[in-house]
Amino acid sequence: MTEIVVTDADGLRTIRIARPDKKNALTRAMYAAMGDALREASTTPSIRAVLITGGAECFTSGNDVGDFKARGDQAVEVPSPARDFLAALRQCPKPVVAAVAGYAVGIGTTLLLHCDFVYAAENAVFRMPFVDLGLCPEGGSSLLVAQRGGQLLANELLMMAEAFTPATALRAGIVTTVVPTGDLLATAEAVARKLAAKPPGALATTKRLLRQAEEARLSAHMTEEFARFGALLRGPEAAEAVAAFQEKRKPDFTRFLATE
Image (tube, rainbow, N blue to C red; front, side, top):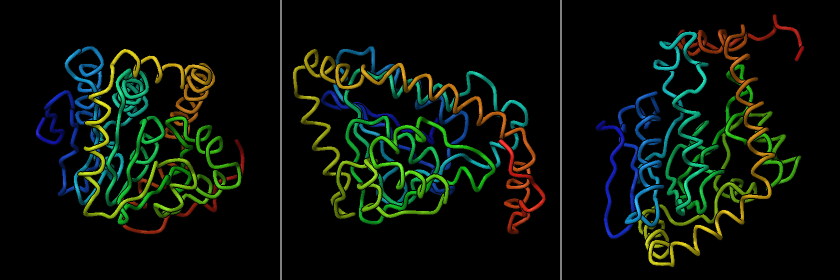
């Protein structure tokens, strides 16, 4: 798997998305590779922290549309590689740091909600375009963004589904801080290495305590999100969105009724 590069050094595992020719769009194989890397990090004592990055130009543009369409009905398989990846991220007992430059679209934004520290470059562009694709939010975003940033901001980001800035991502509780683009990777790596040097047992216990009160609620919410996402994915609105993308035209949703 050359499109997911995993390196270990001095207690830090770095998972780098490396598909620049496709703006780091994610395929099933890439999700599986990242999930495997996280699960291995979780059970390897010498790995003390994890850094996820797409490099200095682009984090990820989200799901690879060609891969997504090629799956057909398998796109909503349970479990799915994307869902397994998010589970591995949520369950990782080690601190996870993300470094985000350029595009962070779809799951490229929602996965950040499950990282412990998120550093965004000034050139980062976030978007959760699910509604415009005939879908609903995933990754717990319809719960967590409202919790962290407030209901009105969540409405704006998830219902309007438009691109937003690092400053807005900071307001929404998606990122920890915004840094100059040229300093991004060094900043995120320095934080990850500080975490890797801390007492691992105390750090893992602290992370668990910080999350456990909301874990049952989040798990149930994500289960419902994925179920509704799958139903919508099989529906006519998503089919129109994919067809419009492939035909390079604006989608026409006017013939669909407002039902839920």
